[in-house]
Length: 173
Length: 167
Ligand SMILES: [Zn+2]
Image (cartoon, each protein chain N blue to C red):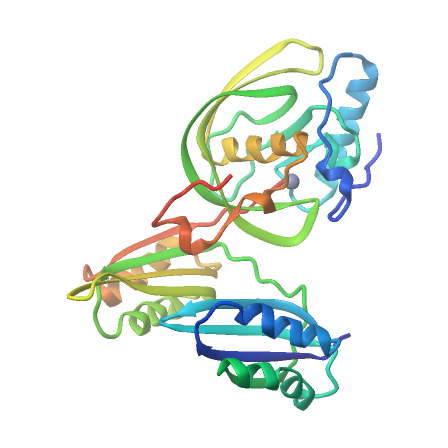
């Protein structure tokens, strides 16, 4: 089994960050596992599973020159996880409405209490700056059925937000 | 009867285009029986296409009658030389593939299709399919043209609010 590290880099977005960081890891004989990279606000955020390093310090050393050059903050942790530990989501939730404080905490709190294990969440603020619209998409796994989830969310946030919950029926073929 | 080996990525043969069936004989029906046994032997696949077992003929088996939440379906279907004749609308749904273990992704497919095919004796069939069953037919028929769903996966961020179809 590999020893995996979770490498996190954050900095002002610019072209070429992904290429520069992954090249530095390759040059240091390290391998990538699962990764998530996306632009949040004006920042580019990267989370990468990295293996093949002799300790977390070695991962830091490998990316430090390029991180310095590109102005990225670096953080590395040893993790217990491995590849092939996917948790297949069976529920999809979309929440949208006028932006207001506490939406994420309210909705995710209600979903957690009703038994949803969130595997993926992305949220965004769309619309005009003067009239922001909050949009959140959640995928997760629940044994409880969507009626229970829907009731829990409605009880918590009422009509303040549009909430759509549907089953994900994954087609295997 | 036999359970056949399933080709998995990165096997290049998955990109091969399959040929139409011309002989509706006992050999065809024996192969179809093996293909069905293979579909049922694995992890609850709703469909399987002949090229997934290295048999490059235009044959698909599908059965959407056992989903968790029942969906409109025509039961178990053996489709030989299937062709989609009409497409309408589109939906995003999650797919996985026997040929790509341990990976799922969201794919845009036509929501309603009309399909013609032949049965294992060569007689004509035609169906109107919607939703999950239509998705299954499109996934399996992609295999006949050497296409895999990973080439059609869309980001969840683009799925629901922009709804563009990427070929
Ligand atoms: Zn497939």
